[in-house]
Length: 306
Picture 1: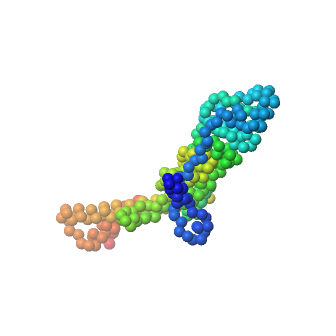
Picture 2: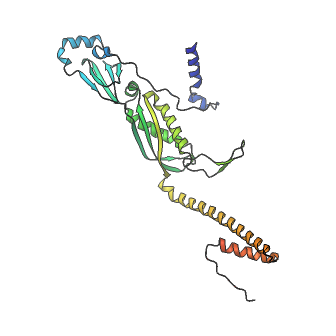
Picture 3: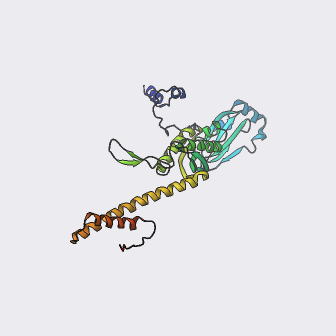
């Protein structure tokens, strides 16, 4: 019963087929990062010395073939044994092993932590703007059999898959989002998600998506971080002008707000001192103060002689 329950749970968590998406059916949100890494079977010493009857007979007929049959496995290294092209065993413990030389092939792969750099990848963000993204993947081989049998070259496979994952995830976010979003439940104001402000969330999603794609290859993704993010050169100048304009508008708003407060305080303080002014005089004082404070150039005083 427990096995049937696990199988049922696995079926319920499995992603929906592509045909369901294409037909417009409602598909539940896919939860990434839950795929299990392919594990290795236990080591068997008999498969090394006597992997098959044919290998045993040939090694007895040709005893000199045992010369040089010792294989040394280093720390942080795994090896897979093939006998006449068929999988036989996996060994991950360092040491010296005696291998039947007839019909056997020993393939090795390192289990050390490794990095894969993705420098200056040009992508499109959610708004269609070209951006240049650099990333680095920290990964490690945990399933020796899967990394050697399921893929042709695990290093190239990780690099290609990481590139595709980076394009998929980056295209879901804008470079920056200045629009203010209002939460209907709490009424709070906040900016939307973007590549500039949500680097931690984007990195976490990159890691989970990549892990699902590399699990069958026996690879565990430790981290997937973006190391650099910028607009593409062809639109960098235009975006710089836009950012300068936005900064200028914000600065002007701050200056105007300060000028209004100063003018209001000036009129209030004059009245508190007992100085009586009509509306025209108040308007003139406020106008002069706003002109001096908000003006780009230094104000020059003028005196009316009429």
